[in-house]
Image (cartoon, rainbow, N blue to C red; front, top):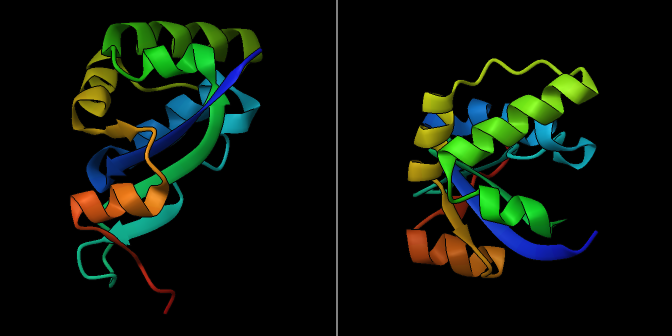
Length: 119
């Protein structure tokens, strides 16, 4: 299975959906979207980021809410992982996410976001 590099940034409003879908797709998706971002670098987080190698097959799903939901539902069922995200949730996730092949700090700079400093 081939991999590709991706930087994924999601708004806080859809972060839980992103976490759930990522975990449904693969064991490698568990723990994604935990790194907090905001315009000031202070809480509250407005966005979450995950970056690194992902399965190339999953890359295409990140641009199509219907296919993303179908794949997540199927794999969640096969892997016996809970998935409550609806197709509408996946459409919202795709519409609001920033998906690029940029290094993470380049993508963050383009969006005007900074790592949230730990308190």
